[in-house]
Length: 58
Image 1: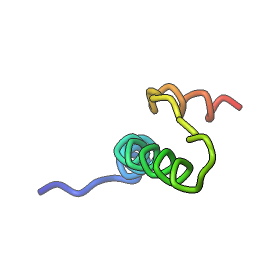
Image 2: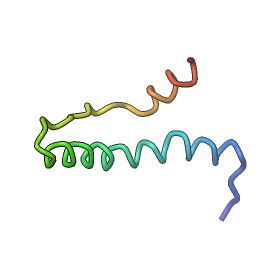
Image 3: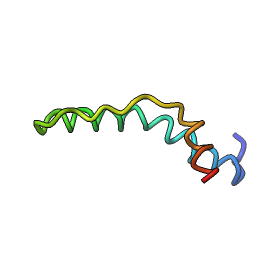
């Protein structure tokens, strides 16, 4: 098994972790808002890699 350098670790944390967790967070928000008797807040699906690029440009 090869060790990860800092660049690879940063990439995994910034892009992969968010991309993996976003669908679960999205489902949680939709479920929570619909269960508290308010109209559900529906987050659109997004391509996380593009979102990360836009964030870094700001």
